Image (cartoon, rainbow, N blue to C red; front, side, top):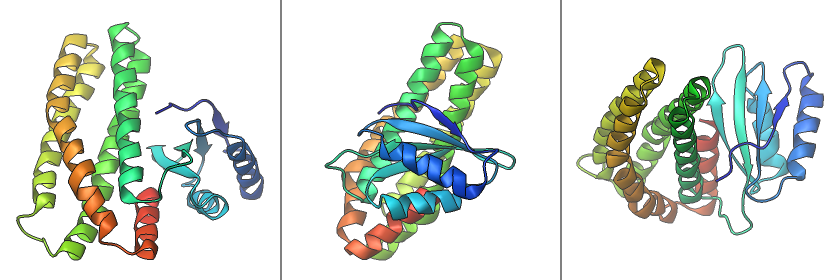
Length: 227
């Protein structure tokens, strides 16, 4: 997973010009390359243009929410990537892992402003990932399998609570510029998160993909991307 290689600032551009500039730059990206897009408003129309122009070409995820300023991360997909829940959410897992490691590396070297900025990006991304799972993915899985009670999504929801508790500990340590506390928080988080992600990527995501038609799966992945 590659962190953004550049930023395109569209905040002073009219929509049509911003759209043209972003799409032109995206067309030149190679698999694994990425960019960030800054916008004054939620760039839903721009992202819909991306999906229309490159229907299987890119993954994207918000880094910072508005109001006032939005920042989106857009990454070129590999040639073998499939447009499915597993590929998209596993990509987001990798993206978040890279952000956390970058934040910890900055903290280790005493570069606290950068560490806090990266930790904030990680926090927003992780909370957003949890939200789209609980509000979009889990209901789709439960409807497709009939497992509304006592199934794997109930376990995942309980683990999400623990994950967010450990996340808050990391953010507090970053604010206090306490590397040892941040490292303990990271270890506690990964103690839950690694197994959690593995269960999702080996069971929950593939089952959801398998039980949806191509058309309904495409709709589900778009909802997750825009969620």
